Amino acid sequence: MPSVFLNGQFIDRDSATVSAFDAAMQHGVGLFETMLAVNNGGEVKPGDELSAVNAWDVVDLDAHLDRLIVSARELGLSESLRAGALGEAVKRTAARASAAYPESLRLRVRLTITGGDLNLLDKVRQSRERASARTNPPPTPSLGEGALEHQPTLIIAATPATQYPSEMFDRGVMVTIADWKANPLDTFQGHKTVNYWARLRELQIAASKRAGEALVFQVSNHLAGGCVSNVILVKDGVAITPIARGEESQAAGHDGVVGDAETSGRGRVVMPSPVLPGITRRWALDWCLANDVEVVKRMVTIDDVLHADEVLLTNSSWGVLPVVQVESRGIGAGEPGTLGGELVQAWRERTGLDD
Image 1 (cartoon, rainbow, N blue to C red):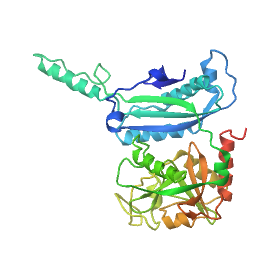
Image 2: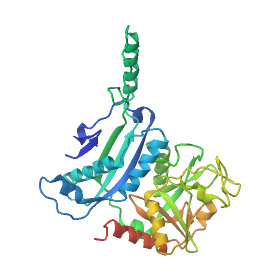
Image 3: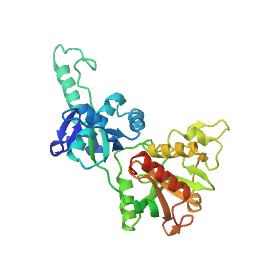
Image 4: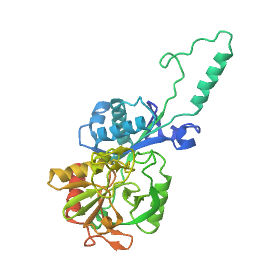
């Protein structure tokens, strides 16, 4: 039976539970990362967990964990996450899943961290109340000396990765335009929080129209991305993508940049970005630069999208997915373009789909 890594232990999937009072259940407090694990063909020796772990490569593992740790710190979720320990747990989870799914050469690994059991906060309060009621209450212990420290919940699960038909990438997909708008002044935008309800609702609507994704725009009517993907446009051989969280300083001097807290060197004010700094997006842009394709990060309008030669979606599940239609409007020649085709092939080679 498949097992789940839950708070430091492997537990059978059917027995893995979290508290009904967990912060993710009660208030949607949490972050997650979805990663692709690929079997590298390494020999697995019976009873040797290390050889099983080494037989799997988790694509861009370090980048995913770095993003998670930064978000957890910036949003006040946890200061104690360590990339080394998390990475080891992810790899061990993939190795154990391979025994449960021996025919799967690609696994979808999801790491979720939540605000933890809210009951722990009550326990801390009750403990202090009891202590204060005593005639000679003992001093409150510091963290690490027996205090009830509030701990997040950590869950890692691996399942067979979805096998998308090759025609989906060869022919491209249609996308809709979401009604929901991303707000750049929302602190939680640009982070991968577990609160995906608005995005999933838009995906439901898109699916009812036989679309593969829905494009989300900001309240300023600039493109944010897809509900579950980043977006790269191609125009006259240049790769253009919306500015992501952490890239705002690169926006100084671009038309359409409006603003927030930090004033650029040109006297302009840069709005914080609600765009997730996608890991596969970063790989695609790096590939472009390595292959002499100019990359521009700037504010993107609906006109930019509709008049692009190519529109590409990126995430760790699809890799790179060409868009050939936005609502009723065709993109470019109405079929995947040259750069998109090259990126699709490069991703396939990188993740072993062509082996």
